[in-house]
Every structure is written in C-alpha cells, then in structure tokens.
Amino acid sequence: MSMHLHISPSAARLAPLDRQQGLTLVELMISITLGLLVILAATGLVLSTKSLFITQTDGNDTQDTARFALDNISRSLRQTGYVNYDFTSAPQITPSTASADLAGLDANSVSATSTDISTPLNSSVNFSDVLAVRFFGSGKTGNGDGTMSNCAGFSVPEPTSSNTADQDRGWSIYYVANDDNDEPELLCKYYDSVKGTWSAQSIVKGVESFQVLYGLDTNTPTDGLANRFLTATDVNKLDDNLVLEATTEPEKTQEKNRKTFWKRILLVKIALLVRGKENSRSDANTSSYDLFGADYASVNAAADKGSTIKETYLSADTRNRVRKVYAATVQLRNNCMVDPDRGICLPPN
View 1: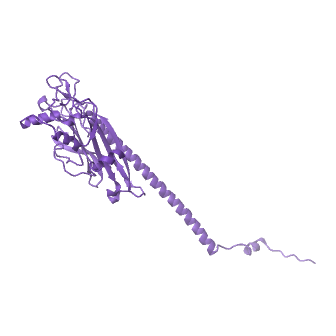
View 2: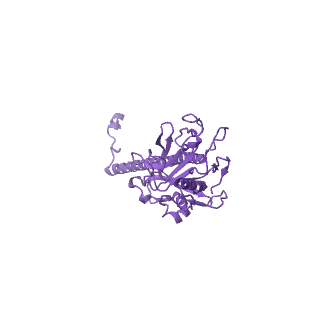
View 3: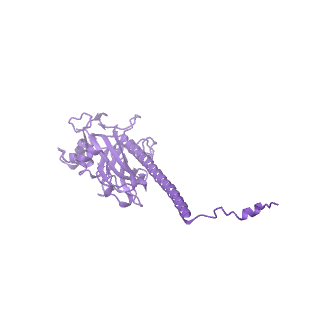
C-alpha cells in the first residue's frame, strides 16, 4: 500500500524556502549610488540648459538694445542741420556765422538739467563720450507739427523768428550715466521749448561704453570727402589753431563759427559696448573689447581710452555679464550752411 504526501497550495505559499526575502547592504548601497548619479546628471543637465538659456537670452537682449540705440542715434545724426524749405515762408535761418550743428566731448558726461553741453562734469562711465546734435524744427505751434522730433521723441517747433534761429534749434544730446542701481544707461538730453527747461530720458540700459569718431574733410578747399576720423578733442584742437583775423570778440566768434572744423564733418562713427542683465558667463572674464577694431586700438588706445574696454578693469560683480560691441557709420545729409542774403549753401571757409 503506497502513501502520497499532499501539500496544499496555501502551505506552499507559507514556506517559500528558496525565495529572497530582501536586499543585502551591498545591493542597497549600489542602488542608492546609481540613483544619486542619475539625479546628479539630471540636475547638471537642467543647470546647463538654464545657463545656456540665460546666456542666449542676454545675447538677444543686447542685440535688441544696440539696435534700438543705434537706430535712435542714427536718426538724430541724419537730422543734423535740418532746415524745412517745403513752404514759401521758410526763412533762410542758417547763416554761415551760426554755430555748428554738431558737437561732442570725449570721456565726459553732462547733467540732465544743465544748459546744452557747455558745463561738462569732467567724469564719465568707462570714458564714454558725449554727442550733441542740432537741427531746426517744423511747425509754428508750441510743440511743432510732429514732423521733427528730438531723441526723446518730442516734437520740435521751428524758430520763432530768424533773429533767434541760432538759439532756437532743437537738441539731441547723448551721454552715458549710472542709474540708481549703478546700471549704466544711454540717456537722451533735450530742451523742452514749452516749459523752457532741460531734461534727460533713458533710452536703453546696459551701455557700458559709448564712443564717437568724426569723419572730417580737412582739405582746403573742401572736396566733400572725409579723409580723417578724429575724436572730439582732436577736432577742438584743430579749431584752437584757427587763424582769426577779427579784432572784437563778437566778430571772432562769428569768424570761428564760420571756419570751425565741426562744420566739415561728413561722417560719424558710433560704437557701443552693451552688457546683459545676468551673471551667466563662466569663463575667465579677461576679454578686451576694441570698440573701433583692433587696428584703431593698436594706435589710439592710450589717447582714446574708452575705445578699448578690458573686463579686468570693470566691477568684479558684473564681469560675468554677456558683452558685445555694436557699431555704425552714419553719413550726414545736411552738410550745408545757408547764406541768408543769397539763399544758397556755402562750404566752410
């Protein structure tokens, strides 16, 4: 008689002698390590992606900033010396004895409320320059007819009379200053003809350096071609060496206005060093930026200090910003001095 041992399924489940009950310490440590490596890799990828996104965003922002600033400055430069001849009553309001329609200062700044650029502050942000543009407005109303506007976008009226035309020209003055948070910004200074006051308005932020060169026709007689690019200081030195034949001060001023080299400027080069808003870079921060190119810097860096900016000279807490140089060359359209008697354009004497 044979005997059979019967084990119920429930009993088999209660005694799985050949099954693993958990993880060993070694296996647990390996699992944790692998998990941490995965988390570390994912975190690094996220941080890298975020840094790249910030860098690209800052790069795009600097382009937008520079594009707007250069467009604003270029538009003002093309207005230099503008006179409205579209209606029969337009006076011949630019005598040869009037002051120049263009002026500038090197490595300097101005106050927002002071008169024009005649009282410079003798200080600047990274040796930035000052550019002043003058032009005649349009329209007899207090704010003009909207045809001509200054760098802040406000309409400029025509002069009240030919006797005050030289003083009544509009102004667009560009300079760099730090705001309340020590962020450098390009400002537009202008004269409000209605209120009779000077004001300034920020155009763009992040401009660490603003540099200007003036293309002059130094030939005598002039041939209408710019053969030298000089700083504002160099142009003023040429004026200081003018030989004046007048004897009285008013006559000397008129003669200097007629002969000034500022009236021989045909082209203007402008350059901006624009920085981003975030500290998104991780390099050594030892770059050098030549705003007018390496060839100009190799000869003029010492005399024109703002034309080359080294990151090692900048504030330590801003060196990790994205920076780019943007430049433009603008041809002046209205290089003309009008003789009030004959109503024709005269070249500088």
